[in-house]
Length: 442
Image (tube, rainbow, N blue to C red; front, side):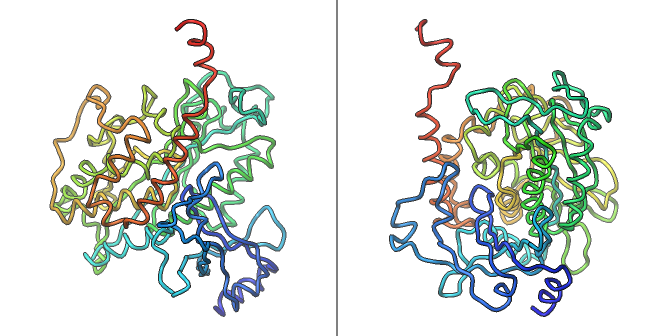
């Protein structure tokens, strides 16, 4: 606490955003005087975890008490960060506890902490690194109009793919400069920025690290990118498929395990070969990933990315340096051996997406599973093995007992309550495509 007090004084912080990631990965919380995070109990309604993306609330009294009880926000001082877009303000990510002092079982950060603890019991520490893809788009207050890529320094709106061209990325140089400055103030180490496959689409890579701190980083990063984009005169979106016919945005997740005692990568042996632990973890990803898709592809829009889109996996096969597979194993230094999960969309909650992969890997280890043979050719030529809709994903999710047991029954029920309400709201809207092609012809 003294270190936190010294930090607040050093950075001349007078107020702090105390925030928690909700089920959608959005920041919920309150702004308090700086001294309050050191000496006072900070509370907020537990029901914030029952609110969906369109503002509706869970009304199931078996999931949330009708009295709308409080929970306690416990600041994690290690997450304190200067907020670049506000004066004398910092942000602090909080853990959530019940009024009885127990970790709140439905909070996404609690879910991830629990999974990390499960691996610690086995003697392992998960290490992850993420890649974030997103679009820079022109401001558009009318949701009935299509989204267009943001104009760059030239003033022109991109109309064709300029994948990996540095000149195309240079169109957004002012934004990239602000993004890097914001990231530096947050203590986020960016290892690379790329012009991606879509018009106005960028990809940002990050340094690897422990699972919780990397989830915190991505939680902060998505916020700072949106702020940097607004400061540059346009918007940023992490929506999985914001433009029809364009590539979707993924959040690829690299993962490996370290032995807690030796700090060695347990996916490889002394000769650089894959270990039984590697094969078991990978086997778990193959077996259980379809059941955790509501955490990797959490929105109705998420599933558009898997339908004929470029560079998006459609099954759970794996391969060496094969980007057509759901699970790619990069070829390189043996000590850096890892599995890249290419299935998650950028619209995910980073705490829950990382937890989803860890659930699958953990079950692979405890069940001593084995993967299928690696795919050497195009996995896109193989059968589509992932669920094709959010509704189908939720059915698989709730039917998978090992996954439900690890994540907790209340968490699963709350998440499904939120997503099913969103499905109902989405299904009630008739799209322009339907009016254009069906209204007078069927």
